Length: 270
Ligand SMILES: Nc1nc2c(ncn2[C@@H]2O[C@H](COP(=O)(O)OP(=O)(O)OP(=O)(O)O)[C@@H](O)[C@H]2O)c(=O)[nH]1
Ligand SMILES: [Mg+2]
Image (cartoon, rainbow, N blue to C red):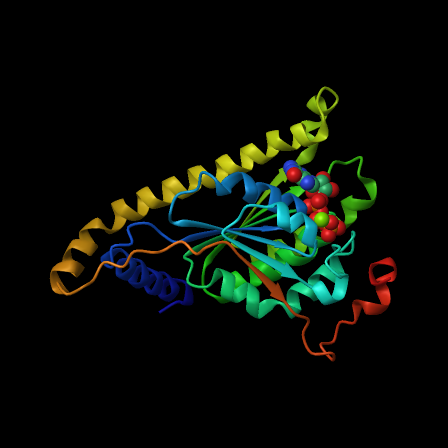
């Protein structure tokens, strides 16, 4: 059996089993990395359906405190002192690598994982590829929504490209949303208002995807589920409980973890 077909049949088994337990909808995580990703998670939090869980990941403690999400993960506190990666993707990548177990714990058992990040800064660019890899290793269907910086943010454009190319090698599908599309409106409104135009469209992409995927799962598997349930009348309905919002602080890994960003940090370590 080809690897792809085998994978598909394994997933079919999983989905049928999931539906038979009364979980009619796939379990979805929306993970926002860095400032832009966190803002979008914050927008989704209030209106998401019960099968959608939001996770905010940041190196910046103060930003993270302001975000509403089911789970919040502060990474690299002992590296950046909670002050963010300040434009250094390699620092944020190191923080994420050290926090891999906590990331895994935050997104385990999800059927679909969306990773959302603004490219060109430190945290989103550095952590999104690590989070996508963790999700993929957990066998979740992994999508990344990457927001590219305005072309006038010149020093960020090459960092953004680097982050994007890493992500594209990992994720099944990468949706690129360009902030440049706002160029003709930003003159007329404050930047945070302009961002909210893009952010709302990202929220809509995720929302419509989640609704469609739930519908198509239902249509495709209803027959199989009926048969499955007849065969196993003892199956119990398991309802997922939302976790209370929690703040997880991921500690740094072993001192010999290879990457040594400490020397590169400069002002972050003052
Ligand atoms: N659409 C949208 N884009 C944003 C938003 N915030 C920032 N951006 C864009 O995303 C890029 C990355 O910015 P952030 O997400 O704030 O950066 P970060 O990942 O937190 O990086 P560090 O703060 O350096 O650790 C910026 O250059 C902006 O172009 C937002 O709320 N919405
Ligand atoms: Mg930031």
